[in-house]
Amino acid sequence: MSHDNPYQPPTVSVHDALAVDAKARLYSLRSIGLATFLGSVFAGGLLMALNYRALGRPSQMRMALIGAFVGTVALIALSMVLPEEVPAIAFLCVQLAIVLSLAHLLQGPTIRAHEAQGATMHSNWRAAGIALLVLLGLVAVMVVLALLLPDSLPG
Figure 1 (cartoon, rainbow, N blue to C red):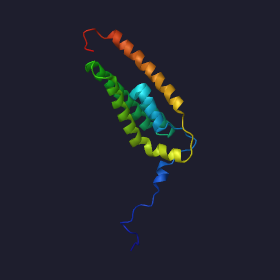
Figure 2 (cartoon, one colour):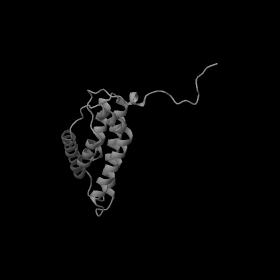
Figure 3 (cartoon, helix red, strand yellow):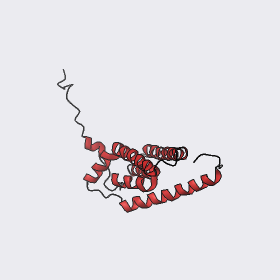
């Protein structure tokens, strides 16, 4: 008969599951928030995708990019149908809350473990630069959409 206690919790270390190569550079939660603030859902999602790439998780990277794209398209569509009286800050607050909540939930423990190891993180300046490039691309897309769509559409 075995002397193993079936009620004893597993002895696997949670920190091993969160272990990240100390050479991998990740974007902090602050960087993801900054990118979202400056460059929209797509910029924040892009930084999350880049974190997944650095962690060697390509399927999660693809999902982050798809989610960022879908979120951006949804916000653009929403901005076209809502009245102009809705303040722009409302869009920004919703974007920030959603992306930061997802970042904390999906990457928070890994990022905190990485920081606790004393690993080097990407700078907030780099995150801001990426966000501004994303914003420039989004503005270009919006200009093209405004030129191509008929004037009969609301908004």
